[in-house]
Structure formats: structure tokens, C-alpha cells
Image (cartoon, rainbow, N blue to C red):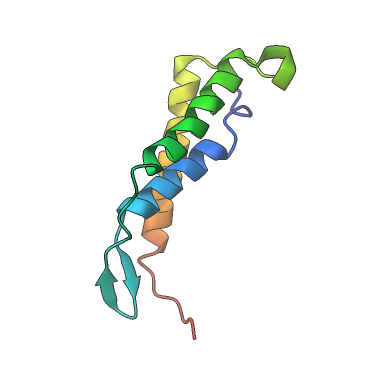
Length: 97
């Protein structure tokens, strides 16, 4: 199975979405993340839609081949797993000064 077409943009989108919806810890206190504007869904969904169109229909222009549903699921799963790893790593304290 070839995962080279997955790229990092889908993973980046998942990371941004998780970060936007999660609470942040600052100075030991829980602080809710900023409320999103009405433009946020469009700013998130348009690049994702463009990525799907480019991968599925880009052909010679972008040197891509369409992914199968299994490959899309694998790409999405890898991105989601990386978010779980990130969340797990954030549980460990750091010695920032």
C-alpha cells in the first residue's frame, strides 16, 4: 500500500482541530481555548476539500493517483493516531523556565 499521497496537511488539520477544541494548561490552571469564529469551519474545510480534489482528480497536473477508500482510511487513521501520541506526550511534564 502506498501512503506517499497522504502528505502532512491532513495530519496538520487534525492537529489544529484537536488543539482548537481542547483546553490548554497555562501556569497549572485550565484555560479554555478561544471561541472559534464563524469563518473557522470554512478555513478548515476548504483546504481539506482541496486536498481531496487534488489527490483524487489532480492526475498529471499534480502527479497524483486516486486513493482507494482503504488508503484514505489508513491516511486518516495515521493522522488520528499521531494526535493520540501527541496528547499522550503532553501528559508528561517538561522543565520549561
